[in-house]
Image 1 (cartoon, rainbow, N blue to C red):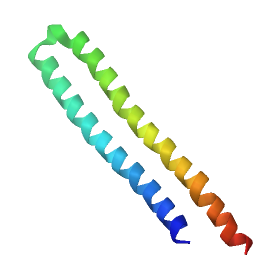
Image 2 (image 1 turned 180 degrees about the horizontal axis):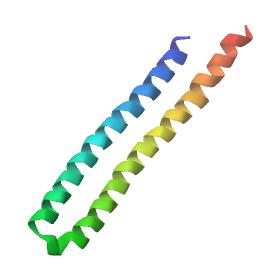
Image 3 (image 1 turned 120 degrees about the vertical axis):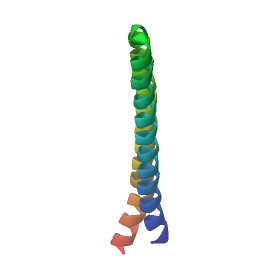
Length: 87
């Protein structure tokens, strides 16, 4: 039973921490990009391109954590729950 609870808690906390980190990083990156565009409007296309690429990388890390959390829950916690409910 403890492994089931640990799997669910770690999956949830891992996803929450990854989403929080990505949200903070995306906010900082967007703020710095806006500052850069305000200082050099002629470089806005380059800054925008790099910003979108950076945001995509940050978001992909959250999706990887989501995948790992779902695998952790369904591969480890679900079979254990099925065993416990069968008895």
